[in-house]
Image (cartoon, rainbow, N blue to C red; front, side, top):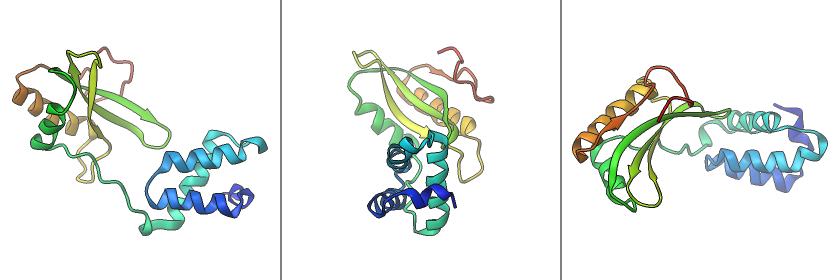
Length: 162
């Protein structure tokens, strides 16, 4: 485990572990980083501390289930958005915690512009995130009678044209 864990006060350790047990990784990282930043700890090191806590707490972590990609769930999310859906789009995104993932969004005619439908990470069934998002996005777009767009379904590219 990272040696930085020992620099945290007991109260902060309890807060971080509570966040980890609820699978609130970003909140845990923020707590570690804000506390240890005066000691020169960077964001990457804070992520390492939290990753070590995930490993230490193991099966006790209540993992957040993946967003549903079935048509009824996606259609319900789409109809709940503030505006008419004019297209469905899949976009690559990524971060240092989750690596690459795909955002499935509804393009809206309203002032909000777009609405989040699902975040697609590596799937437990082994289907690549791009393939799972493309399949779900095409099905939803067909159901809604709107176009579907995914500029780079096979290769992560967060600069692909929208």
